[in-house]
Length: 189
Image 1 (cartoon, rainbow, N blue to C red):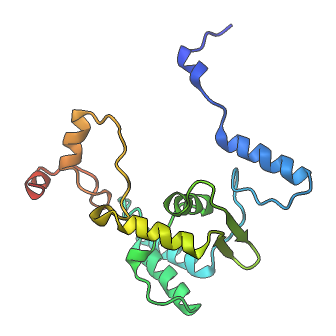
Image 2 (image 1 turned 135 degrees about the vertical axis):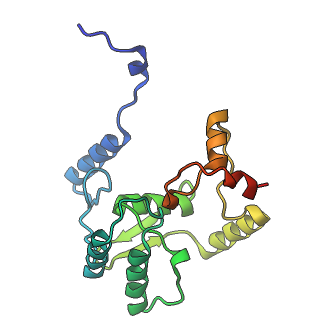
């Protein structure tokens, strides 16, 4: 019999598969379930998104762009939300993702606390955070009390090698190719 590496004993079952199985069991039990596990929940984007994507692909340079999304895609989104009455937003308020699950996960990581409930109304394309206004006011005050650190990720303890620290000091952003640029060191002094 094939001998596997010892580290294989530390492998955990796939969390996404566990979620998919749970969703399947709940659906089989008669619950109205929309699974955000495996596959696509079938929220197709509007024509304006496809048009912006086609336009961007026709001009693609092959270089990395912003992780927030291309300006053309963000502009198409801003135009769309303005047309439905959501005004006052700029590119800096928006971000795109690689799919609904990615966007929803990122949103949940940024905004939800453990135990929060979200209600997803598919027919009306609405997501509601079922948390009281008082709680949201309290959370905002607690965040703003952090001063300059407000709305920034909390520093986590982790080992970062000297080589990675040196690279980080000299690396340009992804939209510039994430290449080393020694002048970055002078700018950060």
